[in-house]
Image 1 (cartoon, rainbow, N blue to C red):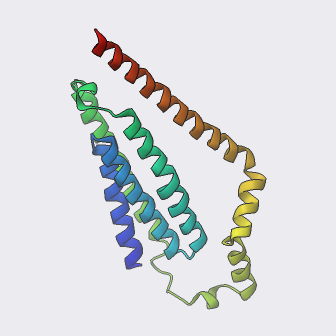
Image 2 (image 1 turned 60 degrees about the vertical axis):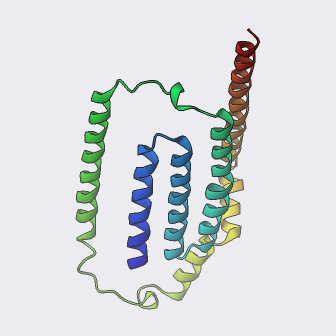
Length: 186
């Protein structure tokens, strides 16, 4: 329970840092930390295969792709312009605080039902057959059947979306390089 709380706090801090950093690269690094904390949460739940997938796919492959696109675009601070929307920024902070307060109250309300339940060993609560059926859902075979069977279409749409993002980043960077070359020739 202590490890879960520590990982949850680190994850919340890193998620807050993702949305408050002006540098896209710093936000991406904090997002990698969030993904690793989520993998740790999966480990505390006993889903080791899902935790490994979280690290390999999201913290590894997807975030490398995101960092590659960020560095390919090569955004400079002067391209962001002056921030003139201070009212929207304060309204955003107020709205985020309201959502955080609601989340705390909802979590407290949901957890009060579990406060009276004494902790027991899992073998006393569930029968052996139920434990075996739960372990079936944590296996690589079950994840593969679900991912490439039932969710094959969304999986392929996601891969096309990522490919489109890469091509879009290349087109934007190529256009910027051509504009910089034309300005240099004048």
